[in-house]
Length: 247
Image 1 (cartoon, rainbow, N blue to C red):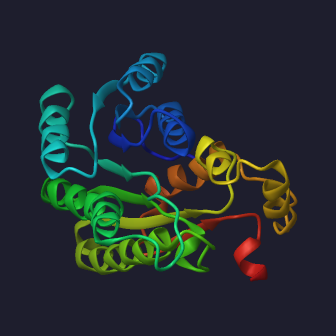
Image 2: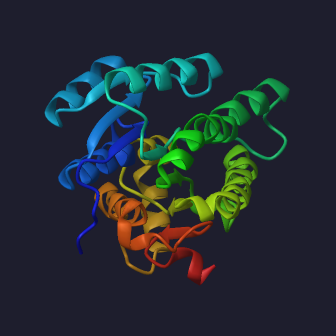
């Protein structure tokens, strides 16, 4: 499929590793001009160099750093046509475990990052009558995951925001979608399941019989960014090997 993305500008956040890095690679393969952002500066710059991308360290949980990220992006490359919001997951915990400060921190990272990035980028997309925003969420938007209450509560909020925004900007040629990965072979997953036995239990519940690869999640994101996907907006594309279909 011809994506029509060559020459577009994309800002990919959380792109120094895992799913975010795979998305950056997928877009680079389509000829997209990349700006990569993440908190880990050394690794970010290393990976950006490989992709001939601009690296801008940023912590998406801080409003001022999002403002700085967009300011530097526009100066060095231009306003992004594509924005990938991949802020990483909030910390694990049972339903009553997080205190107010943990909830506030998770909301800043998971929900407010999506709102602030969209707020900053939508005006320029409207002027050009073209834009793509994709939020990387989780299957927790469909089925709560044990011991991940912050994700279970806040990622559905991102989904609701995206559906609302998608309807409001559709006439401007802008789409707003979500990709919800299931268990994916990343460093974060192995941090959440350090016990090999526990991870095997997770895999056993996946109808496909294996973890998704970051590249498989990235393929869904690249498709939603493409020109042929122009009539898909306000949707959540699940990449989970059938897990939520079984739930």
